[in-house]
Length: 496
Image (cartoon, rainbow, N blue to C red; front, side, top):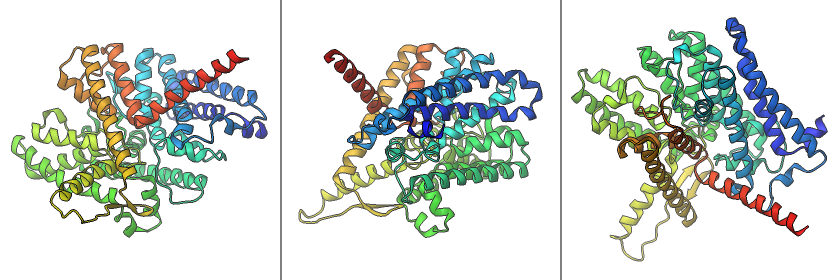
């Protein structure tokens, strides 16, 4: 058996892993004995996925799994197709429990599953209080695993020379350990520890155990699914809001930065450009939002600061949690929130958006360009930034990658907005906000995403969530790679 799994296809191993994850919610049944009737809802997709995984591994027995991935290709090319495959498989099998359990229709189940795995947190559940506990746990658990990433978790158990390509293709950039397996296990252990700490802190603040587990998983994954209709604001507790802010900041930080922090390398952490930029944005935006809220709403500076701090952190981390309705905010404050929604958290974190690093590069490159126009021609500059690996140059390659990604991101926003105006027959502003929220995996909704939304609109939003979680280009490259392989197979068959 071990030899079969070791030499089996990477795709088979991914299917086995998904089957295991789908079965995890069954562990909460002892706490909800009346919901035992929902056990088949999770057993069926879990068993199907595991059987498909074993069948694939057995079919490719004694073949090198590395042949599934071309070694000569770039990491994004060689790893994009398996990454896209495992995420799409997760979407499908994660949606089946809702269908079998009679909770949602097929398309609504797929939407909820995609929103969960991608950590978008955009929900179409009309009454979250009426949903059984096992399904509420399933939603939060999908977000917790989706925040970490399928590949990061599976490389803990595999030993393939292509693991690094897959790890990079999933959007993880920095490595501070030479051994990827060791590093992934360290990151997973840390996030389990953070989860336990978060649950304990929530319990101390007065939240019940089940809600504490669900909210800790969602906050760490910067996702946003909640067990309350009014989100974190339903508790009306500053202490609970403080714990949520702490967990969201951890989730919005680069995995490699978290490793440095736990090793006590505080000076190195605050030297990283992304972390400095993150706290600078919080320091600048919180007072601006505070005064805007205080001038328009009937509460003092203290209450305004409380809502502003939570809203700024929730948005820049792309979690989408709220203490009050953001759509009641003054236009100036809401505009600042939308700007943070596009920026997002750190690269290699659980957050969405264009990422802090790219936003910083855009500002830095623009600044250097403006300064160069007023400087002597012979003046030579060497712009740089600091990552966990130390000082890094902002060279032409990095500039091209940054502008290329931002251009693609903007193009997707425009296309998605226009498609949403057609399918939902809504205003341009409503379509722009809804699709941007899905693409940035923030999950805030102005009401377009609901149980009455058309299939076409849901499809556009689902595509946006997938593109946002896998950072646009990975999806494009994965689809192109898949099409190329299919064409090659047809060409080989025609020759033979």
